[in-house]
Length: 487
Ligand code: GLU
Image (cartoon, rainbow, N blue to C red):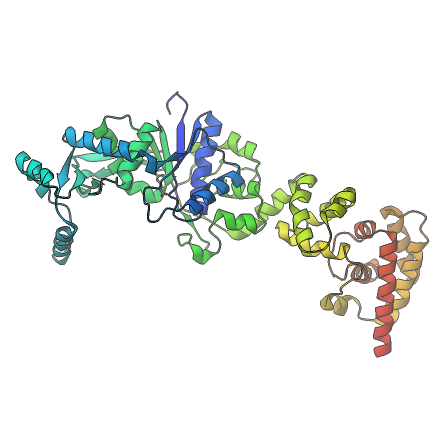
């Protein structure tokens, strides 16, 4: 790679949301720029006015910002560069590298149909390239519509791809492609090359789906007399069924994951491992700093990668467990407030308690949102009993009632409300009553939380506090008495 700092870019078309494939391309360019002290530039390819929307441009900015992929220099809007695109096409006309084509769309369509009917592929036959100069001048003068076609030279076009190594296309397979439409607007390949040259891009890293564009772009660089960048084509992303990732596989927009409770650092970590590996044995859970340090184009993989939502969830759980608790609180507070459990002011006033509860819950979930229903019981006065938990743990109400009453008395007699004495006394009680601790602890858990699973029993009692814990056990005794009475 050249010694001068790399100039990389992400060049999305704002015709939809920011797709995970696009985000992965952006991430790899960003990582390489940050790793090497280069620049990461953003270009919005909005020349297709019919399909480009401001909303989509906003979604791209938001998605990149959420992921923490900041760009250097001003955003380039391709549509603002039409004059240069035209000037570059004019230059190719002036130097004889391109020619005007007056064939109409209908004529071309007829010839295409004929070629296909004869079993061949249509290639433009260069008839307009053969027009005499004065005839061309006459038609231009008379206002005939024309497109500008690039005259593809003989030979082969090759490059050393960063991912695929050497790739060669015989030029005879490349049609004299249009670079400027009859309305003077550029075709994709021409606009991209004109902009990449103007932006001084030194490495073009993008999806595999662009491989067939690259020989055309290389020919344009050469014709324009510009230095070639390097190219790297990233493998496609497939769903778990091995097919190209699409909406059929579920959410494919970065914004969707943001709203599903995925943390940006988990998304980044997950995307980084789609088509790249640090090599050897490595720890999959990585911070952004670690990714920057480990990233290298040597680790780019050739084969398609698989987008497994389960793995993303797992990754999220890993990052969630490592997040500073104040950050977990900042993310979950609005959710529990929206769920109507409490107010922000209440949580602010009981900050330490809230953080303790979050410490207990965050290790039990993979997605932030899953904390919300788990947190509910700690905010409510009364317990809502899960019928399955009751059926499983309160099978013998007649025996359990007195056992819970004894439990409550034991807890009430504790001089302090701390986990160690709680545990010691309840274990002693179980032994004295001749029951296994599980036979005491599991029904007690249902009494305290209404659920068959929860954080550690003693942690739960600490978070609930003495009064509420004792009140809940008493309430459970009443429910059990009711069950006995009902037979
Ligand atoms: N605008 C193109 C796209 O969204 C990418 C252009 C490029 O990276 O060269 O697929």
